[in-house]
Length: 521
Image 1 (cartoon, rainbow, N blue to C red):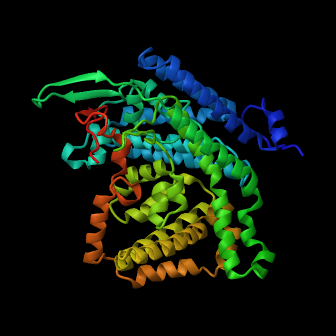
Image 2: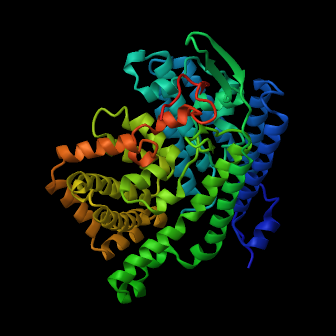
Image 3: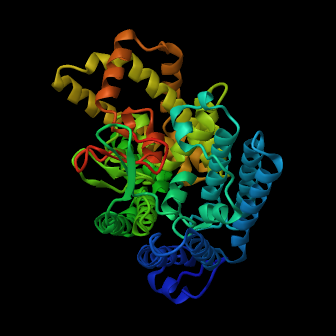
């Protein structure tokens, strides 16, 4: 049976859509991303920074991005230019002192209006590609850059945190640079978010400049180091994409999340069966995100963007703007570990523009902003309100009991198994409304579980002490030091994303210096 869903974009691929029985919007998205992958290889090969000017690279990247937008979304792609153009005008007119506030309000407000229009005028519950999706990424870029310019051109150096200092932008971008950053073909459809400084460094070809300090410690000389090939990293990520897509097209369709609220299932299934199916159905819903985000990462890598440096073993790291770590997600033993490895760049954006700058209740403000940014479906708000409770409860439990299960190793293993089970069930319980979207089915699901995790979470937060025991604090500090490379155990992921790492194996005298300083591991 042919798929007959409408689209705001091109219908050129309608026969292919009918053949594979997928919505035309989804087919347009995948084909455009595959085209972007080929364009990225061409961009790196024929428009390399060593062969052409930054101006040409900016122009080509922007025009290709706008073409892909028009193909997928038709005239709705003009919203990308309108949102970016007005935001740039605000930056110029208002000035660096307050423009970050005005840009934030306008960009988020414009996004919300478009989301309301799409949801309540067009198809409610449509999960295919829509024009508000790219606008979510553009909103992140607009607000991030506005704060980075404010930090770099208005605030005093001593007022900035180390991560803000590294991301600070010291000059106003030109209109072309601004549009290229927001609308380039590598990230226009699915992101991920990257910092403005990282993007400009890539376009200008400064990602591989090396500064070598001579023996006297005073003289320095710069030269170009051999650029590593992204081919292996791209092929590995494409393999992950293929497996994720295969899983989504087969297993995921046989395990719908909606079955959790099926009347017959609720009436006949035992509690263990309900828990197991909940976990499996939510796990099966994740591969489509794995596919989209990993493909977007591969596109950037294929263009030469995303190289972070070398690890301690001399292995090339192409995860500067990666959006997820699948292994850490599936084996998360804490709510924080899951959130730190899921939609990484969005988590960093929330931290940069909200959590670090909130004057009160940063956790609550961050969850509210995340809900508003995601859209206007009621299920999003139910998920993030539930997630706020789960996060506070998980943090409280960890602070109060974890120090009792550090040693011996057998006890620690038992603790990890229990916390893995608890975390996966809590995550699954929390995100069901995010999938169901509407209030009625979401409330039906929560009521079928008697709101047990909500009640448990609230009781934990209210009854257990909120402050960390001294011993637990000391243990966490020691773990933070010994495992500082792991995102889930550290508090400075921004520095990893804005600084290239030291190449300790190949040349201990060299430092990669396209940014202000190098992250010391």
